[in-house]
Image (cartoon, rainbow, N blue to C red):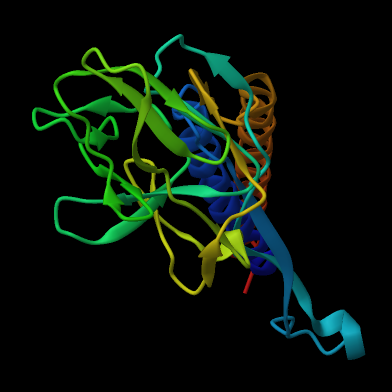
Length: 254
């Protein structure tokens, strides 16, 4: 009976972790460029059976172990915004940005705007990096155009010829799953090796939405909650059985 309780408890612990992952996905269903996470479990065998009639493989007890999470890096749907500063990446690249502390990080969120000094920034105020540093516009710039390769051109004042303001830097990684999530829609390179991306393209006036399937995540949440409740009921039955056995043994005459 103790083994049954331990097995049930191990499963409840993994289900609790799975609920946290699902809840985070649901909370970011409308976050631009968000990539959903999914739980990964494995069997853990431990020889806790102690009765002599358990021999060989029958002595091992099968638990559930939380192995970790894996990230779904598939591209989310593109949504038009009609804002010339918004950009969406077609492909596996990431925007390179510079946070307030000066470090370089990466994001798929292309909801951009201009700060007070005319620099292109993310929704959180991080500088969007080009191949030669931050992208900076002049007060007289208009008719902003972003080519598929990331080249940013404008018409300046009454000029009739384009002026180049830089080229949006797009970075790819040998293994995007190794990127470290930092929150605020940012990633650190972590153990992933980066290189300039020459295959991805930019789509001006669009943003990439989250790749979370909200209906699917809510369905999974209901399934996990039902499993958690079923195990709780099983553990209660085991506890009642244990209690009943002790009471009956206590009634046996000495």
